[in-house]
Length: 118
View 1 (cartoon, rainbow, N blue to C red):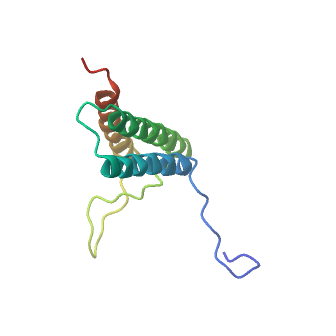
View 2 (cartoon, rainbow, N blue to C red):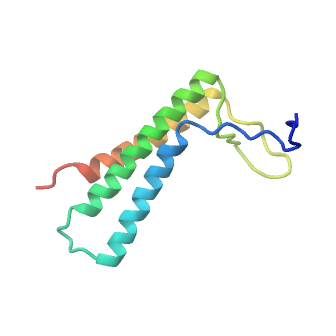
């Protein structure tokens, strides 16, 4: 359906989008600072910056999972294969498994980056 202005309607943004942008910006800023300053091996701030970016990414994934479970379908539009006869979008169980795998991987990464080293 086209609005009165003649433009197609704009899809609603996900509530997790701002968190994803924050995580990406924090990771990019940490990488840029690391490239410019080249800290020694004992510096903790690159690990902390990337660890916090992964924690924000985990929060965004958890929020998006809650939104997708609440609506009953995935906003990811994942397909099992590509090509001319692409498969249908994956089911809810597979979508939850993908989210949980991404949450586990990013949570483990954040934990290893942020834990105290002795």
